[in-house]
Length: 225
Image (cartoon, rainbow, N blue to C red; front, side):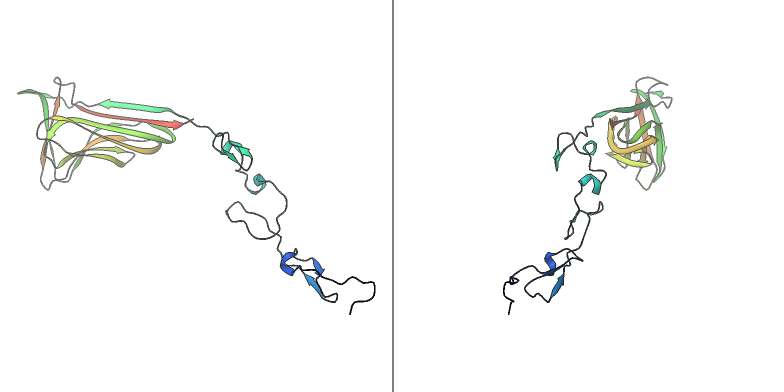
């Protein structure tokens, strides 16, 4: 029974309400209880907020990347207004047209080449230098006729980024366009591949003998500035 003049304990806290290492009395004056709420800190490698008592600190103290310069312009996050603002600008452009010394033939100037079964031949190459992680566009074009199993390819940095359907039996312009993220000096090629199991002929057409093959390659890119 409580002593005269003493105040009866009527606390309702439990150990999960009190910081770890701190003690308190609940309703039993002889029963000291130790709290077990952990002292915790947020980490920059997780989105989870651990349960516990957190010290007063700014979010930038948790993750140094939480700054205005790394938040999109005019976007407000936890009171920080972003200033990150990038625009696309031209990076580099390179192009070339081919020449296979066209012969004078009936109906125009043309040149015939035989492509072996399963063989790829490179028609034209340029080697532009791209800024880091530029978005590059490659365009390959050929004015030719050939078997449907012959296809035009656009190759950038050793990767085929685009391929046409098979060539037509009537001479016409075939174009294929592809994109890829590129960095540094990269070889870009206009190539043709024969997917047939036998050799096939491709006939290139041009405007005049010895100057225009009707094959072109162009590569350009845009970068963030």
